[in-house]
Length: 238
Image (cartoon, rainbow, N blue to C red; front, side):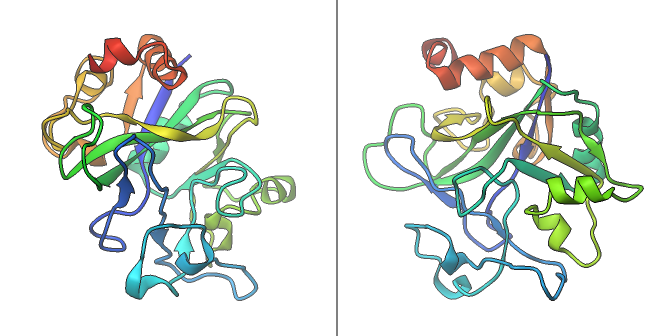
C-alpha cells in the first residue's frame, strides 16, 4: 500500500485567498477558479453556487475548477480527480487500485484560541483522501466512451480542450472529505513541516514543500490513515 499527497484548493495566487481552518480543526474546502476555456454546454458552478460560509467577495460569480470532487460535497456525486501537470501526474500514475491519494491545502487560521496543533496565520493540512477504486487512467492518448462516462463530472472533462494527463476515481469506501484537517505544518509556523513530511514522506521539508507532491510508503500511508481515524493523534502531534 502506497500513497501520494497533492496540493489542491484555493490559495493566495488563485483566487487570492486561502480557505479557512477554524479553532476546532474544521475547515472549508474552497476550489480554485477555472482558468481555462470550457465547453459551451458544460455546467460550471460559480463560487456563489457552492455551499460556503466564507465571504468570497468579488469572485462570487467566477466559475470554479471543482477538482477533486467528493461525493455529497458542493453538489458532487462521485470521487474524481484529474491533473494535467507532469510533476503531479507522474507519481499519481504510479499508484494502483487500493492505494491512496491524500489531498492537502493551505488554510488560513481564523477565530480565537485555536487547537494547539494549528499553525498561526496559515498552514498546510490534509483535507481529504481517496482509496483508489481502480488503477489510474492514463489520459494522454484520449479517453474511451466508458471512461468519459465514469469521469463526466470532473472539471477537466468540461475543459475545451480536455487536458488531464491522469484521472483518478475514489472508491465509495475509504474516500472522504475530512471533518477535521490533519496538519502537515508544525504548530509554530506554516512554512515549517512537521514529522509527517520530514520523517514519513519523500519530501525534505525544505523550501516551498507545501506546493509539492509527496510520496508515502506503507508506514507513512498507515500513519496518515490512523491519524484520520483518531488512533495516531498523540504520536503525530504530541
